[in-house]
Amino acid sequence: MAASGSRLAAAKAAQGRRQRDFPEAWLKKFTRAELEASEAEAGKWRKMTRAAAQHAWKGYKDTAWGSDEVQPVTGGPGRTWADCGLQILDALDTLWLMGLEREFEDGARWVEESLAFDHVAQTMSVFEMTIRAVGGLNAAHSLSGRPIFLQKAEELAARMLPAFTRHPGYPTKSVDLKHRARGPRSEHTTVADAGTLQLEFRYVSQQTGNRTYARAADRSMRAVEAAGMGKPLIPSELDVNGLLPSAIPWSSITVGPPADSFYEYLLKVYLQTGKTEPEWKDAWISAMEQMLKQLTIKSDAGLMFVTGIASGILEKQVSTLSCFVGGMLMYGSRQLRPEEVDPEWAVAAELITESCYQTYHREPSHLGPETFFVIQNGIEGQDLEASNSAYILRPETAESIFYMFYYTGDPKYRRMAGEIIEAIDRNCKTRFGFSAVEDVTMASPYKTGSMETFFMAETLKYLYLTFVPSPQEVLDLDEFVLNTEAHPIRIVRP
Image 1 (cartoon, helix red, strand yellow):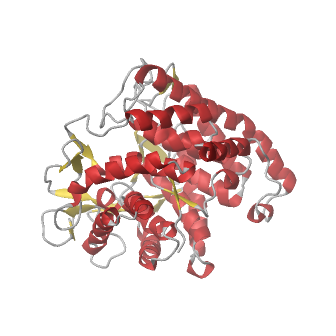
Image 2 (cartoon, one colour):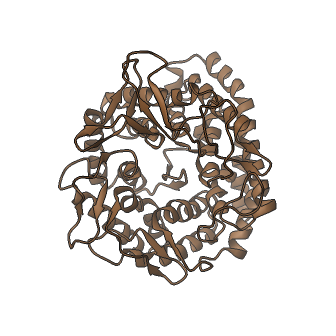
Image 3 (cartoon, helix red, strand yellow):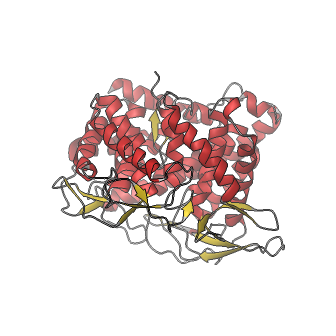
């Protein structure tokens, strides 16, 4: 306990300590004076983001403690998932990284004394419980070293194993945690549902020595790959009723939803296992090559996004969820060996991130819509049109901004992130937290009264790490891999 506390204190101290020297990559493009000015400018945004986390946590603790979500407008419990304190599990690592010691200890105590997974006799999403709950517990263990987090992660993973006991290798989309039973059969699952489990289940196996969890997730990941029949980009929906893995051929081909995090995990599984399993890296490189050839759409005014192909036609509607791709490309360009890296990755990463930022910047609220059309009319400033104008506190644009800043140090990314946190604080803040809003095209949008747990797990974390003086000191991406819910999982070296 004392050792864990000292590590948390060190993380807290790092927030206000200027790195003695800036990363070499930053100094190649910017002067020390420019970087110091950026650091000073970001101070107010860092404080705002940390205060936002404290405010959201207080509203949850005061009115919905132990529930899965808080109702941010009225207070009290929000939506029920598994009645397992999901907001606590999803926020622990953010609290740690922000140096919020008291809040972290409150959450850790609840996990030790009250966390159980047998409260609700209904099925839960395997995907969501994996990335939010197992991932959150894994991250808390990775950062603090406290055994209780690993014990609870293994207990939850064990309750989810029945979902994997079927052909052709994919798990059922849902699982009954109380009765340890798989959910109902369905006609299809998605590439993301079946292919976003390895980081979390492998970590449990790595730390416990029980290979059962890794084998289950590996089997599912390989079934997804087999369904692609050797093609780098896989149709996004999968047939679960055959004896052999197969895709539904008329489903869309995309690196956005509902396939997005599978491609993210191809790269991250390779990195988290100490770069010892090149099959995942090779598959990711091939997928990125085809994505850049087939799945990007540009407006005549120069913006670029990642979309999908449906019925052989490139879709002009884009999901904000695909905005993570900019960060993924930059991450890959810096983590793989130089001879493996396509120089176009970094170029595309910068353009995609800038374009996704514009979806926020151009709206009166300065918040980005859930989906939007790319209009190819050649008129700058009129080449985007919101189709679903809600903002539900999503993190993907902030995610790409973080990765771009982490590796380049470019002050413009801090300013982008600063605009976003100011817009969130201005438009989404409520008495008990932060609320999704109905229409970003309004200067003062209506608050819909929901706060997804990923707001604290991802959005605030990515923004905060963009504002700290040295993100490499607070979270070293050579030592940790972030899962798709932004939970840091320690890399295992061979």
